[in-house]
Length: 634
Image (cartoon, helix red, strand yellow):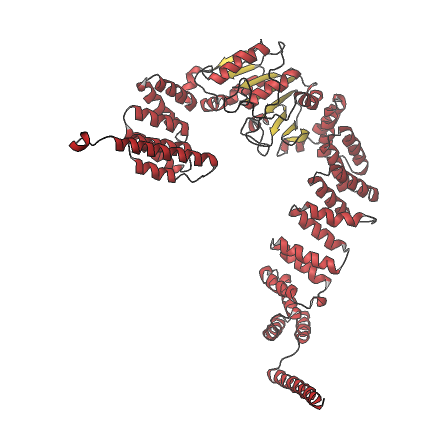
């Protein structure tokens, strides 16, 4: 027992000695506690003695590199001086310190500001969450955090954060309701979003921001009359604005109250004439209909018009780009209804004809002139959907590749949901522009469209191919064609200009090659390449013609030259591989196969096929005896 007591006394004395030595050392090197450097630097900063304050902090930092108090003073100084990268370094050390009880409200707030300014949102969110944990239900932290989470599109977290806050709470900031409603809307909880906005308006009936969103959500839900009621209430709170009056006019137009729509729109044109003329867009948009894959948008021109045109997207368009022909159409004196697709390559099968007519029929009935147009898939859909509302139609090479009867063999029946035939209509005269030499388009026009639209006007463009729109564009006539139809005229095909189109030269050249008219094929393929050197179809045709003329070196040069500028073009790479195989240059063919880097399933299958062809060619060569070896001849 005595030994244990002696040991305890020995340890106690050792600790005292150690503390005494530490104090002596601190006195000798003039070392003070962190609090001293913090308070002294504060005093010097207040006296505008920045040099002395920073010198004090640096001295303290030498002794205590991880001190929360000293790093905080550095962080505050650099933040005030807008040296934010330095401020970030010190805030990092502040929030890594285990002594977080020393942190103040302003520290969290300032650090969040620095991280946001440096676009380091994740760090800002982390600090904001820590501040909210310490200062529970603090509105400023809640709003700051919800704003950042919305910026990051983390809607579920916003809903969790704000949803609990509004339960049983009153007199919350408007931003709480707005942020929660926005997150719910983005998460497709439309009714919940509307309910939150309603709660917000019950708290603050004069909030213009809440009312704006309340109007928007009625429009999103296609509740036109509710939107009108809400706008009318908006006008009790705030002076009618340019944009809100236009929107109100459009809504009256959508419910068929043309007189009211015109009165309001005329007021806009009179009272806000300069705004209309100088508006950057020149139109306003409302979405009339939306499913997962289809959208119908109404573009109202900020001018008095009597015509409306319905445009339909072609196959390789999606609703993130401008609608078909929009750049041209927006400059004309007409309103636009654009039928859009979410995905490229989709065929708009989720839109029923009845849904289309329900969405647009009331809107279009009061226009003096209704027009519809589209190219390829858009040509087909313009005929399929708008014949029921008696539009004038311009259908450029109409086609539906998945049609069970008139589509492409490889694509037939892939998700086809439309009626097999168009509804019969002998009251309209749709203008159908197509290439009679294209077998698919020719059959569809003659076997289907002429039976359903007996008064259709056909404009035939031989050897233009299926890409009629590109053909007309390269002739410099696409704009003229569309404008003539808009003006009620019948466009004419100027055959003299067809030679300016690469489509025509290439298609006719290909036909000449099939019929062994090599002189014409040579001339046309060369011209098509000169017209459009980057068109891989023309390059391919040119190489095929040169091979038939036994000009293999020129053909190889043609293909190789193209691949230098477009090395990822698979079609031309395969053509070059085939040329090498034909010439028996199998090692070069193999090298080209290995250059196919886009190894998707289709590309891998093509590579396998080429390797098999190379091996088959190699085997055939080996089976042929060398002419100078007598033993092999025997």
